[in-house]
Length: 54
Image 1: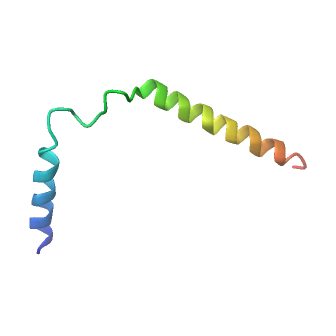
Image 2: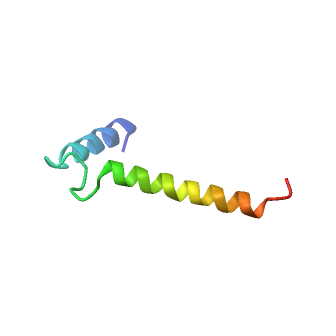
């Protein structure tokens, strides 16, 4: 199996995904991004609390 035939099969498989556009209805980008931001800020705050000597 060559690289070109494998790539062609993957393109065909990806194009058969349907009409949904790849996003789930319940995924809101604003909530997902906001949740990730809050989680990273919480991790940053925890890290700075444990590293007071620097």
